[in-house]
Length: 156
Image 1 (cartoon, rainbow, N blue to C red):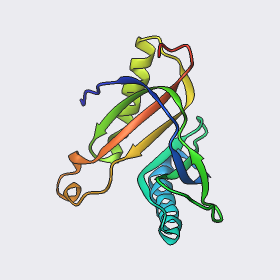
Image 2: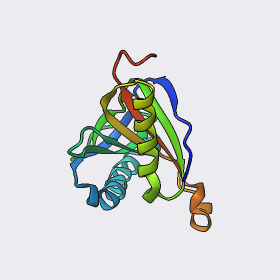
Image 3: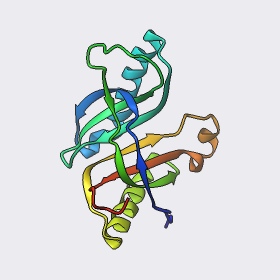
Image 4: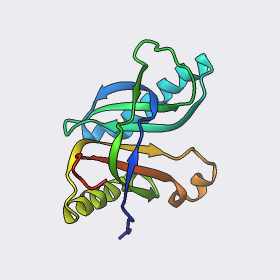
């Protein structure tokens, strides 16, 4: 079983270009990469500087926003709109390995929050490391950072 070091930190919001969707848990493996591709098509066409892929899960019904970090001006186009990651106190962990194992990182953060009396505020999100060729040979190197927004009285 993988062990996760959970960290508390205070984050500022990061501007994003996203597509908003609602999906079932079984559709996420298809919806997230599909939406990332659509967002990247628009970002590239606008020649906007962009960063890592992001998926924000706003609630338990899997209302989500999927896209990329923005490092420059961006004009909305069709379904691709501006948004931002939540700001505030968060509990986070880093997962190394295939995306199919991300559930363990989420479970570890939620367990740690319960054990340390930190209340979750609702949204959580994943920031995916930049794709690297080495991942094809060694998927254990794939990096995904998992974040959970905490209620204001959670100690930061």
